[in-house]
Length: 454
Image (cartoon, rainbow, N blue to C red; front, side, top):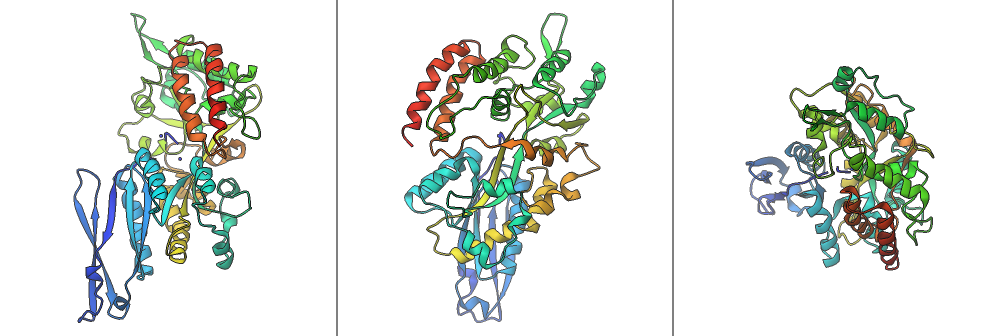
C-alpha cells in the first residue's frame, strides 16, 4: 500500500539470550530487549519478566521483516509484538524494520540465499514472484486447524493471496483503492461545487482548468491537479478507457490499442497541453503541494491521510470516488500481508505470530493511524478508522471504492521488470519529447520480450 509511495527505516529488535537465564539461580530473570530506533533517535529498553521454570527452555526466535518509515509506525508494531511476547514467552521476535525500496530488494536477496525472515510483510505485486519460487508456507492447514475466521477479511484481500490451488499463502494486513483528495478551501474560493460521486475524467479536466491559476506574468501559481502519471492514477485511467496493459493470459502487451493510446494521450495532455498539473518531477511531493495549496486535487490511497492529519494548519479537505472513464470506473487496488517463509524452522510459532498480527490489536491501531485500510473488516468499519470528527468527511469512500477495485496484472512473475520498462519509456511522453505513437512502437516489443522470460 505510497506511493502504494509504505516506507521504512532499519530498526532491529534484538533480544539477549544471555538474559533468558537458563539454569539461573534466582526465582525470576530479567530479559532485556534493546530497541535500536530510527536514525537520529535514541535507544530504548523494554523489560519483561519470566519465571525460573519458563527460563529453562530456550525460546524460539522469529525474525520479522517489516517495511516502514516513521517512528510512530515502528512504535505501533513494537507495542503489538511486545504484547505478543508477553502472552507467548516461549517466542522471541526480532524486528528488521526497513525502508520500502531497500526492503523489497533485501527480502529477495535473503530468500535467494536461503536465509529469509520467518515472517515478512508481502506486497501483492510480489506475491506471484514468491509463489513461482515456492517460497511461501501454505497457511490453509493452519487456518482450518484453528478455525480461523477468514470471513472477517475483505474477500478481495484474501483473493490477492490465494494461489491457483485455492490455498491461502499470506494473511492480509491491508487493502486499498485510490481516491481523489480535494482541497475544499480552494473549491470554495473558486466558487465551485465539490466533485460529485458520478463525475468523469472529462469533468476532472474541466474542474482542474478552473482551479489552475496564473500570476500577472503568466506563471502558474496553483495547479488544479497533481500529476496523473503515477501508479496511483495510470491504470485507473487506462482501465476507464477500456484498455489493458497485458492480454488475458499475460503473454503480450496490449498498449497498442486505440483505447490505450487515448488514455495515455489524456494523461500526457494534462501536462503538456492543458497544463493543469506540474511535471512528474515538480509534482512528486504532491501531499506537500496540496497542504500548501499549490495543487487542488491529487489521487492517492489511504496512506496520504496520515500525512494530512499530521500537518499543522492543513486546509479543509475531503475525498471523492475516482471519476468514470468512457468504459466505466475503476480504481487501482493494492494489498499488503504477513507471510511465512516456507523454509522457516518454526512454522507453528510463525503462524501464531501471523495470526496475532492479523487480529484486532494491530488492525485497530493501524485503522486509527490513518496509514492503511485494514483488510480486517471489524477494524475497517470501526469509528477508529472512519474518524467521524476528522477530515475526510466521507471516509466511507475508502471502503466503498473496493467494489470497483482492480489489481494490476501482478500474476506474471516479471511484473516488476515490465513496470520498470514502462516507467522509463513513459518519461519521454510526459516531458513531451516523444509522441504516444512512437512510445507505443518502442515499448510494446520490450514488454513482449520480458514476458517471454516468464
